[in-house]
Image (cartoon, rainbow, N blue to C red; front, side, top):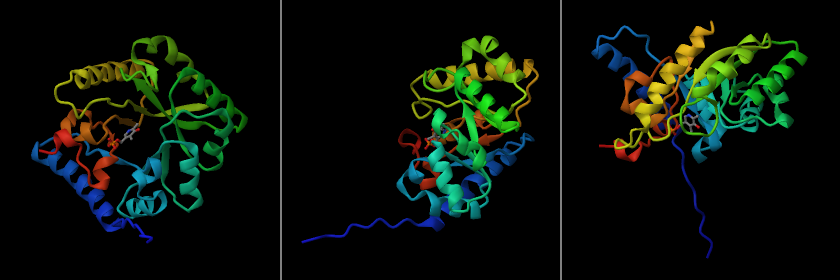
Length: 244
Ligand SMILES: *Cc1c(COP(=O)(O)O)cnc(C)c1O
């Protein structure tokens, strides 16, 4: 006997999740009488929108008002553009030299995650005779992607000086925001704040500072900055330890 297994994805629910999140960010600011601007939402649709189907999910999110989407790599970004999605698309992952052209041909916004990657992108942008908007990622302790937080005075001046790169965004990623016992979140938060100061001291004023995945968004409004970057929450999942 053959059984057909089907998963139904409720796009209206995803749309409502996006709107509910945006509304709750606004509400929390208002309840706290906080005049800080309400953060935007960078809607994470990497990994085929967590398996829900990148294109239909991205369309639903765009219809709900999402002006920024985020994907893991260039290929995922191309898929969205080829399906006709407009708006801004941020690419989180490290870029390989072979696919960097997609950034220019399909208007994708790359993350600068190492000095070498920044040099390669600057050279490519110069070839295209363009000033490329990009987001600078700070490694605040995950030891994965990003410019190391304790080395910025050495690594950043070259990037900042490049006429081919515009540092539009400044970001980091939290490793354990869902773990209340771990001190890592606090450590990363402090390091990122210090990194923001170093960047400002170099004369850079990024329009969009962002750091919070779903767990960090729920945990601490101090890391909302200009935009939050949820994935799980959009798909109806509350990171387990925070679910209570
Ligand atoms: C996956 C990812 C997110 C979203 O994380 P969730 O835990 O699903 O909210 C945010 N930022 C980056 C850099 C990511 O890779």
